[in-house]
Length: 425
Image (cartoon, rainbow, N blue to C red):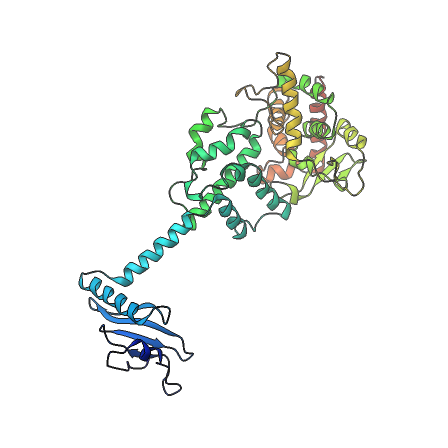
C-alpha cells in the first residue's frame, strides 16, 4: 500500500526534483502532495521512478488519475493537467472513462488500418490452420492467396474489402479454373472472418457464398456440376484430340480421364504407389480428400501411359515436372484450354458443358464419368461413387471395397476406357 501523502505546502520545481523515496522505512510507493491543485501528488517507487497522479472524487467514486511521468511532465504541466481534469469532473465528465474510450478508439483505428496481406499473415500464424493434413497442403493454401488475391487486394485495408473486390479476384479464373476459384473464395472468406473476430473489420463477410450468390448465379455456376464437363456424345472425339497432344501434362490428363481420379491425386502420384503387375494404384489416405486409402484398378490403357514415362533422377513422381517435382494444377488446365482454343479457332463451339455452356475443365471429367455410369451403363451408382472416392454409406462402401468388388470395378473402368476410345462397352 502507498505511504500516506507527505508535504503539505506548495512546492517549487527545484523542491519537487529533490523528492525521493524514504527507503525501507516506507513499504511500497511514497506519495508527496505538491500543492497548487488539490489532490496533485508525485508518486515515487522504491526504485526511484517518479510519476504524477491526481487523487480526486468522480461522483461518489475515489479515483487516481495518472498524468504522466516526471520529469517528462514538468510540475507546471502537471498542475495544468490536474486543473483541466478537475474542471471536467465539475462539468460532469469522467476523465478516466474518456481516456479509456480514446485508447479503445485508437486501438480500433489501428486495427482497421491493417492490410489484407497482413490479415493473411496473421491468420496463417494464428494456429487456426494447424489441422492441415501436411505442410504441403498448408503451402498450397497460402500459395493460392499469394498468386491470385494478394496482387489484387493485398494492399487494401482489410476492413475496406468489399464483395466487388472479391469478385475482381475471382472473375478471371472462375470459369477456367473453377475448382481453384472455389477454394480461393473459401480461403478469402476464412481470412476475412478471422479479421472480423479480431476486430480488424465489421459487417458481413463479402466472400461468403451468400454475399456472392447472385453473381455466381449470373455466371451460370450455381448448383450441381459447377465444373465444365465434356459431353458424353463428344467424349470419344475429345479423348482422341487429347491423345494427339504431346507433353507430360497431356499424359497426366489422359490418365485422369481413364481413372476418373482428381487432378491433385494424379499429379501427386509416386512410383511407389503403383503396382504394374497387379495393375493397381493405391493412394495413401494422407493424399485423399476423405483421408482414407483409395485403390484404383488400372486398365491396360492406363498402364501403358505409366510404363511409357521416363523416371527422372531424384524424383519419385510419376508425372514429374521438368525439375522433378509434381506438375502444377494449372498445367492440366492449360492443356484443356489449348484444346478449346484449337476448336474455336476452326470455327467450332469446342468442348463445352451441356447445361452451362462453359468450357470443360479437368475436374469436370469426373462428372462426365458419373453421367456415363448413370445414362449408358447398368453399373450401380454406388460403384461409381466408390470409383470417384466419394464418401457413401459405410456398409455399402465396405462391400464395394472388397476384393470381388474391386474386380467388378476393374471391369467398369475397362468399359469406360473403351467408351473413351470410341467403342461400345
